[in-house]
Amino acid sequence: MNRKITLSALAATAALGALALPALAQGRGPADPVPRGPGAMFRAADANGDGRVTSEEAWSALSTRFADMDANKDGGVTWEEARAYFQAHGPARMQRAEARMEGRGQGVFRALDADRDGKVTLVELRPAAEAMFRARDANGDGALTPDEVGPRHRR
Image (cartoon, helix red, strand yellow):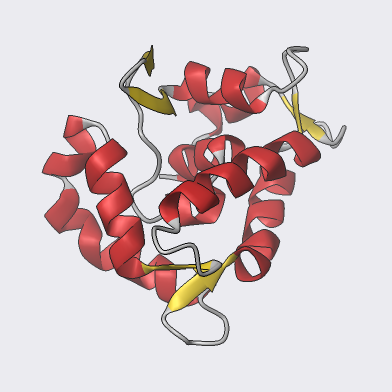
């Protein structure tokens, strides 16, 4: 789950990604512009193509994914918007696990919703996303490499 959360942050929904987190498949299809799979998500966040994702690149990717989730464009993502997004863009294995993850996702959502208004804003999301980024940045250089978000760093 932590890997999925970190990849979401990289791909643009970091902590909201913790709800069911990001679409993980492979590649990018013309009909589905959402980057899928750990490698594709990492490459999408790596704006300058240097093989590292800085906190600025991760935040930019997160903001983009957040805007995609915000169906009514009111600056906040409700649980319903997040669930609909992941149902539409999530991999089949995530969709099969939906019932199991529903309670966990709602708990994460409530934790992110600092003002308890029923939606998570980028302002509420940023501290969690930055904390996850720092936790993954093993060498403290301000950038993530594929090794720092790989399977061995799951827990």
